[in-house]
Every structure is written in C-alpha cells, then in structure tokens.
Length: 151
Length: 88
View 1 (tube, rainbow over the protein chains, first blue to last red):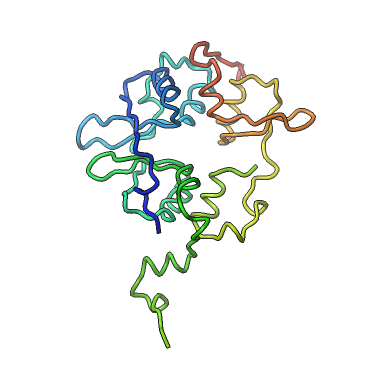
View 2: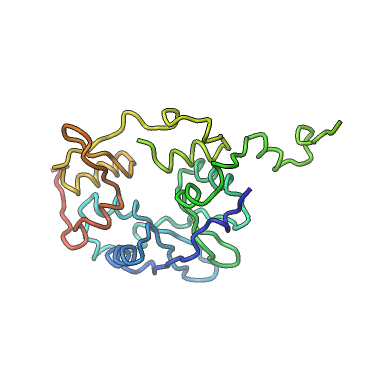
C-alpha cells in the first residue's frame, strides 16, 4: 500500500491567522492553491487550515468584505492531520468518514498536505485496489482469517 | 455528475476495484444545476446552503461547469463585495 508521504504535496504555503481573507485569496491565486495551512502561534497550538470552500461558503456567499475579514474567523482549527506513514487507502477512508478533502501531513512539524486530488492522481488504487479483507488482514496480521496456508 | 470526491470516498476508501465499478454506482443524479445568468454571489450562496462545490451550467443544453475555484479565482468578490438581499 502506498503511503501518504509518497503522494502528498510538499510545497506547503502557510498564512497567519490574523491576515485578511483578501490576502489569503491573493496568495492562493498566486500559488495556484486550494488551501493554506495556518501558522501555529506556539509549539503547542493546533494546526489549522483555510480552504477555498471556507472562503466561498463563509465570505463570498454572504457578500462580506474579504478586506475586512480575518483568516481566523473562517478557518478550521484544530484540523484533522495525517501521519506520513498512513496508507493511502486509510487516508481515503478517514477522509470519507470525516467528510474532509484535505489534511496537513505532520511528523515533528508540517511536512506536506494530502488531498483527494493527490489520491486520485498519484496513488495506485486503480491498478491495485485493496479489498476490505486485505485491509483487515493488514490491520490484524494475527487474525485467523489473515493466515496464509500452503498445502 | 461524478467528482474526485465521489471516487475517493466511495471507491478508493473501500478498496473497491475501479475497473469493476460503473460511474452510475457512485454519481450524484439528479444534480443541482445553475442557469448562466445567475449572479456569482447567488451561486456562492446556493453552494454554501447545499454544501456542493460544483454544478453544471444549463440553458437549453450543457454550457459549462462552475466551481468554487472559479468563484475564488475569477470573480470580483474581493474587489467588489456585494451584499445580497435574499433575506430582506
């Protein structure tokens, strides 16, 4: 199974929570990104994210002025984060169960972002689909069903 | 419509074989459609209220697709925020 770190996007752009939404939009346009990771204020502060969905749903949809709104007003924080060693199928399962499309990849610090586009475009789930049974066996190598018998 | 989200949530997340599954098994149909003359602020409001990110633009036939990326990158909501008066 491929791992999150093999398909994640490593060029991550961060923004301060106190920046204006207009600044976030400008940065996203310049870098061609659909989400930004929000800087942590301290080492123990959780990670946050701001996505194009947050901006369209919470700012554009209500005709609010992006120059007057701050990123911290619309971010998701704390956000769900992914371990770089997590298998891609499990990332997909986590995303489906929590209805998210993107998450920072964290180990020590921020090392990337993984999205449903990365899963669709870079993972091998089309060539090598994993069945539920195989996922179960990977997860529980000691289970009776997971044993391989040779005759 | 069928989106990346449909494919990842319903196929990749369950280790289903994409070669054995058909698009009709995972698509959203009927889907919400947008007329070409709807204001972009109303498109944003419709998307927010229905939690969608993309819709076909239809008049007579299929003319295009509009997404939250189009709204963010091409519309003038940053320069000219328009308060819309749906509630008033």
